[in-house]
Length: 240
Length: 268
Image 1 (cartoon, chains in turn purple, brown):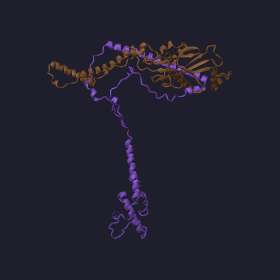
Image 2: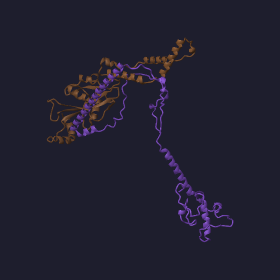
Image 3: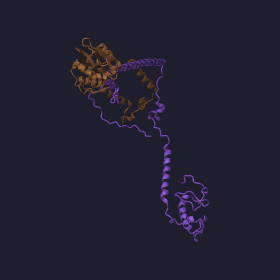
Image 4: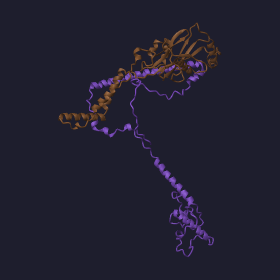
């Protein structure tokens, strides 16, 4: 209901001005006698006019032709404008409620459309170089590398590659042997007792999350008194 | 022997299902192996290991490359500007305009920081226990894992082993291992046991003299735990236990036992 909805063509709805049933927000208008103004303002007038017409009908023949109600009326169509509004109580309740609801829905739709845009991306501060570090005076001036130096570096990288490969293989072998030992132990346990085996392969819920401080370069100093102070966290927190 | 048979009877019901599948002829055989739960308690390293030669060279190279690829920082720019200023002032034989103000140079700041660093004395990486090779101390070899070994009487021999205790029916093997740990180190030990499953097994048959139908040998299941509390005030007599690294295990353990134990210990 409302101007947003398509209105039927006035000529397509047959019916007389009088015999039409005026529902709330009735948009349908009689053929020919359609008011020029939009029904919004005319609705009340229409209702009043209908009431007046109906009141007169009882004494008149059912005719479609509007005529002067009284000799004070100068024009026929002026009825609609000059009729006092107190003829029928204004049916504002239903119409208004519907109108307000329609308005709210329109607003909500608009808001949803606005919100549908992609959320603003959070900037990664590590990837943004501050402008002051792109000055030319910041560029370090060092002597170029000699060919011997580059040669040494390449050979060192190759040695490192081999070293790391050996280390990694040793680790993998150790892990493999650990897994094998455990499997063997579980097999033997199963041979002994099914119940103990089931208890052993059950997941230990208390193990994770497992936290431990890693080793440092020097062991902790006994009786060390750290300096007084407070750390204030100034990291920028972004919300989308 | 009576205790053994009682243990076996308690276990035979659970062993029945397995035994029926495997040994058709001896359907009602009681358990022939005694079960033990042993705990391998590890003290994790407190200090990083020293770098190897390749690692040191690589670290130096990485530092060099990082320096070459970097730009000057604010502190370095300040230092360069101040050097320029000083040089100009010397060349032009200026009279000090800034005699009234005391300007803190970047060089002075660096000196101050250096002094402060030298004044701080960190704890040494090689402790006294290292020097005296006191194997009962926990503060030896801070960069390696230390394992607990105790001297126990098995049969009629005194042997060095991981603390172990016989399994009682009605408890899981993990709780047996925890009990073993508690008997040797007291109740207030805090250790994180790594899971319910055993890490390794050592199976041995009793010498022929003691061996019977019911009592062929013993199976020792090892469990691993990380030591978390560092106070061992309730530890027993000093000559009974020892904390050793993986390399030193060979000094104490029998070869077969050592072989099985080495399989589940990471080489650190």
